[in-house]
Image (cartoon, rainbow, N blue to C red; front, side):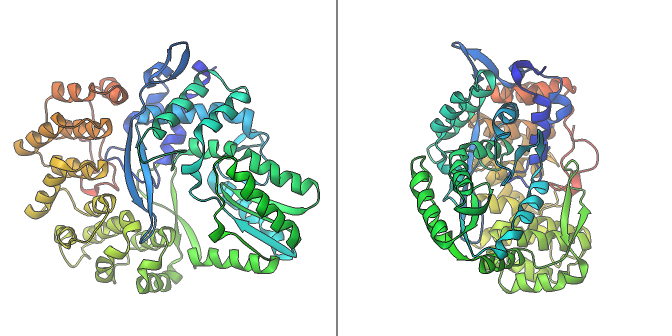
Length: 520
């Protein structure tokens, strides 16, 4: 029986799976969150304690940043410390059996289905199959909720959990993590890029599901389906209009606003054609499954069939501003997989129009460099982009720096990274800078890291600075003292002590030149 009802190892396995495609990439792959290590822990080791008569977590530490979801679109994002993330996910897993078993079969996404946690890939296949009846329906409607995760009313959600009989550590952890998130001045609702939040989001939409179920039971709707907040249903034109009006009125009671710009009623055949066209616009190719050595457990990445890759590349380079992150990432991963670098010059020039795919672009450039197919030194390209005065988000610039091999840094590139190390407030920029500079440590690098530690209060930035100082040959006592400054870093400190202060190797997709062997 898991202590306090929290299966920490299962929570850690889910968190481990979130690393694939995560918006923040840790140089060392969050070693303190490895399921093997977490299996040796108790809830108190993650800060889950009983205080003032209730269980909760006292450690939540967030780092806020902005993430480019398209050429012009920006999404608010956060990084949550590893201990709280594992506790939060374990808590969501603990309550799912009581609450997810009542979800309609036509609800898809991260959920419990038939008593088993269903992964998103399997759910997506079921979701696509559920769309088959749309084409034969007289009319069909589609809608979604504006900024859904950010507008979930956390207090209403907590009350709903309490009313459902959820109590103890699972309730306390969820409440503490979400309340801490909402106390950030520019963040609200549920955290994104989180399996735990996705499971809770399904609970937050139960009343919407009930409205659709009632319409189906009364014969007004012939079918419905929901993927998170993307909702579609079929029936007569009058029934669809009535349901859409009810959804708007009903959603507002819970602080949710239907996105009218994406709401439409069409014939079933038109709706089916639109859905098919949307799918084709995202991925206009045949796809194969190919394993990538990206240090992600059990990760397989979809790639474009080699026979169609040239056309896909043509279409994307013709209009990079219009590309989705999904399509741009798919094309770049495929080009990297098949080592097709014939148009690398065009990709280098398109960087400013692909801020939302900067992580994929940098890995493509890095691979071209190691295949001796890059027409210039990676440092030259990186410095050129930094000197353009183009208004890149900090996340995008940090991803560009991943194209830099740490074993061949030009003086100008080192100067940019030293500037980030000295004053950047971006966790990803500091992480890249401290790892690249610390890979060939000098006394000036160690001094710069130590000075930044003294002026930093962000717990997550402190964590990467401390690990970077250790990688660079700094004092163990200095690293220990830095990690002890915030309780959320207790987990990584315990990991280091349990492993005799042996720092794991840098993840291969973060820095291929340092991936062999261990850092310390």
